[in-house]
Length: 142
Image (cartoon, rainbow, N blue to C red):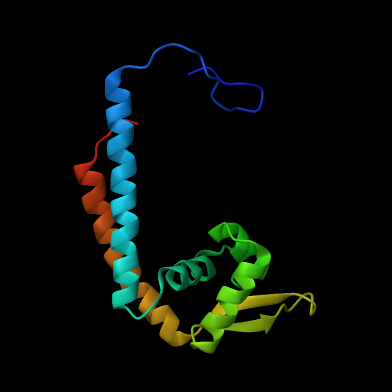
């Protein structure tokens, strides 16, 4: 497919075959089902879906010192203030702790509590199994 200077796909105006729309619909439906399944799993583990995503953002962050509020906002597509509120609620629930950055004391980073790390590991194992099933059932060719 042709791309513009920024690497985005160009709209060509050429009619797309019906099966492209059907495959895209199938894919998007499966994504929504996975999201719902994931939310149900989080709730069964005693977390809100947003808390689960927060824990994943903290654990999955590439820097072992932990992410900042800004990093979390970027990962979860939230405004900084909304990310801060989510973090505040998670901290009150005993899921994360705030720690000062070792290199810059002005920076606050997040770490998982031991209990949160255990919950996240269990949820992640379930998600990996579901993703394997998802992949096996959905050779969409997109």
